[in-house]
Length: 305
Image (cartoon, rainbow, N blue to C red; front, side, top):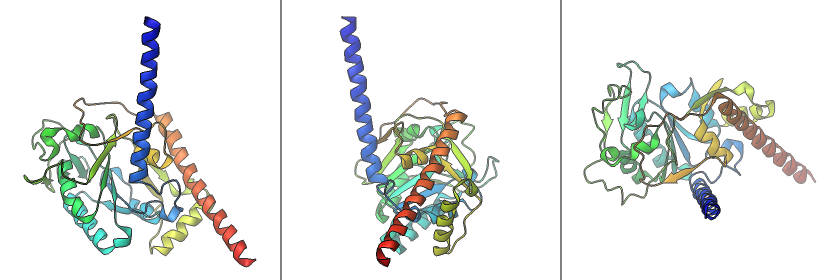
């Protein structure tokens, strides 16, 4: 009897894992369909990325703009939203369909942008419902939340309107305001899907240097930056979640919808695993650049014949 129960449990575990894989693969195919195929300068086509300034590095957006993302680095949600609106209105051929949030989750009490941890620093918050309500009219269809304890942001009591006094030391003064959804907003009717990790955890942001990339990759990036009338920064910041999305990492589990988490998680990737993940990110960029160069050389040779 015990043996039968064990076999059934193993079968259920395998089936559940397979279903999670299918769900994640389906979401990745919708949110970032070009990732496995795009040339390096167009890697982020159709995607926008929002950085909280204190999770970023100087001129970080130049790196992302060079590889095709629309990038926003601000402590003011109103500023970010207005710039997203302007981008999608002015660039119909490169509209943001998927927005990736590299922000704070504030222990699950609100999406936070800030310049620093001092109470007087510039800082603003927004609810998940407000993001859906304000971004749907300009064509955003997916919002990927790369923030600590992102599952707690979907709790019904704060989904539309944030608690101004949650009693959490991370919920610092909103010197640039708090944005809530209107009373008329109904999450069941929005076309904007929220994507979060299957389990809440502490999200890690890594910092790398452009010089860590292969010389050929740096050449491709420099040419793309020149085409877009910008200059490459010396460093860039990237979250583990974004890396896993690009790599189609089998360990990544995503879900869409309003399923929320109550528990506060302290789970975090080990430094050793973070280093391996970052190395894989560099290798992927190098691979894409080499593939692009080979394809370009083949096309040039064919044209010469």
